[in-house]
Amino acid sequence: MSIVIENLSKDYGAAPVLSGISTVIATGEFVAVLGASGCGKSTLLNVIAGLEPPTAGSVSVPAGGAAFMFQDAALLPWLTARANIELALELRGIPRAERRQRADGLLELVHLGDAGAKRPHELSGGMRQRASLARALGQDKEVLLMDEPFAALDAITRDLLHDELERLWRAHRRTVVFVTHNVREAVRLGQRVLLLSSRPGRIAAQWEIDESVRSDPAAAAKLTQDITARLREEIRHHAH
Ligand SMILES: Nc1ncnc2c1ncn2[C@@H]1O[C@H](COP(=O)(O)OP(=O)(O)OP(=O)(O)O)[C@@H](O)[C@H]1O
Image (cartoon, rainbow, N blue to C red; front, side):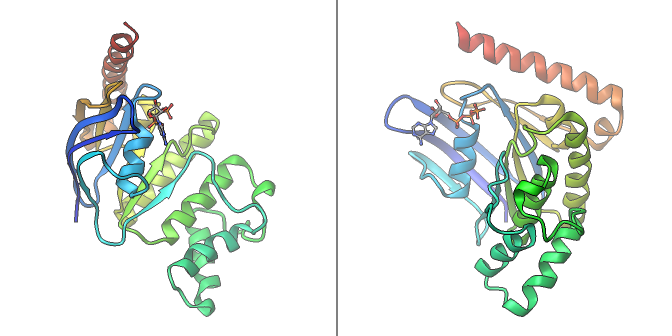
């Protein structure tokens, strides 16, 4: 089941935020969404998540909805990393007897096997995002929506988490919609990059990224440059 977005428009009562967005995101596809600040990227995710209704048009997502991961980990501070994940499992109706083992499995998956007993403030930013990713995976939804999940991390931690996310995506093939400001990140992760224009947000351009480009640093750097130039154009266009 793919995500089908048809002629989606969204406003909050004033000027349109999103206008006439149509695209189909295939099952297991990884789509990165780029755009200037305020162009409606988070709004698009919120509409896909069902947190906001469309003003016009439609969005259909696979039954069971989507899991969501935010820029700040949004872990409950009074619970351990493990208990945060157990809570997601409980909400899914996993029996108590199984939760601990499953939570530990998810912590292992994101290489946090030793940190289950720690509370969020005892974890580094990168570890918190790993725990948050484990919690999102614990929801076991086919669709994973990620809103700038690594934006607050340093470059090295971010690169590590890119590798981790790619590994998990290859192993589990969730459908991922990943919002970012960072062109290099979009090219690093996305099979497809969507560029939104500003006010209203429309699909200004999109690129399919072949495996051969991703694995060739020179080709990836060239594409990153091209997309950055196009993004600059969007931002300049909006500023005038
Ligand atoms: N709940 C809301 N009520 C009113 N206006 C909103 C609401 N949510 C977002 N907006 C407006 O919609 C526009 C798009 O916001 P959105 O957060 O979707 O953009 P964004 O591309 O994710 O921005 P950024 O990259 O800075 O996070 C902004 O002008 C914002 O002020």
